[in-house]
Length: 117
Image (cartoon, rainbow, N blue to C red):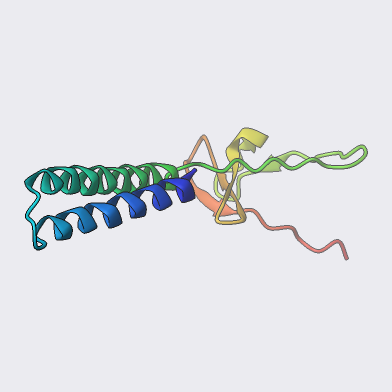
């Protein structure tokens, strides 16, 4: 939809400039100035609306859901600072890394997996 908007806006601005330019030819046409200004104004308004919508879409939030295969058991996780029990609601993915926020002492740290050996 954005591409169509850019194409329509470019065509309107192009013909608007041509109408304004043509109004000052060998036989002046004052009505062409009005049509040219309206056409260019509508084209610029479309460009403004498209850029405004693009800024609003830039603030969208992406939700990452992990679907684990098979039966996966989870041990209880304890806070490294206070030893409080943490739940899945306390874990959030921030910039691709799992971050834990303790609901008791409000400590924030990255969740790491220790090697099994």
